[in-house]
Length: 209
Image (tube, rainbow, N blue to C red; front, side, top):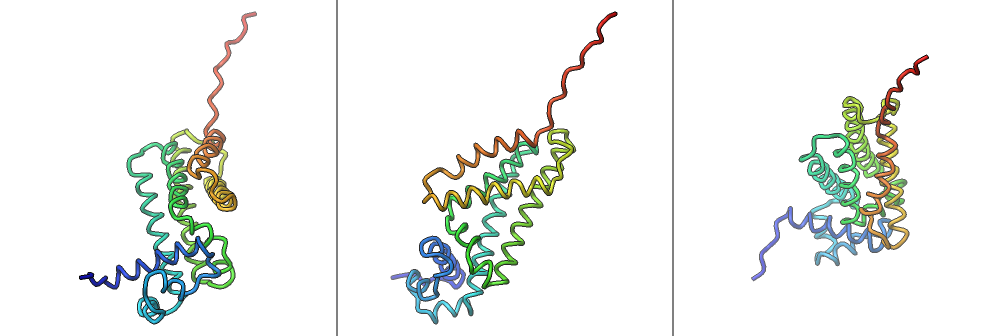
């Protein structure tokens, strides 16, 4: 005898299907009919849980947001030094993208940029939260003398966001032919060397006359 799924379980199942189908067919071609077929419901069954297609997208954005924030908490939870916390945040983001490959497709979709203003605002809010988290770690590192004092924390955060987005696009276009997290670690090391405060040159003694 099959166990009847709760409304919350069904909603999560629908959102998971939307994420997977975004990867498989693209967000712009995603239909409620395809979602219904994937989860074994009728279209009216889908709309009992989500009254509009837009509400499905907002649910997807909330699901991604919760996953990102959980990843950030894990990344920061066991680390005290900003030099460790900063790259951990970036790698947590890359790990999530690698595990949910529909995310890059959504970020660069027409659905996000031209057709769904509420989704665009939700994703922009996520990006702003990530920027704030990165910027806070830059400020911590500067206060500890670990990061260059001439860096603007917000600008430095945007540099790392650009790194994540650029890698995600290249990974997606290449057909995922490389390990996203490994490639991210390699480029992140280069960026961290730039961000660190240069070591002070040793003082030279004056020559005796």
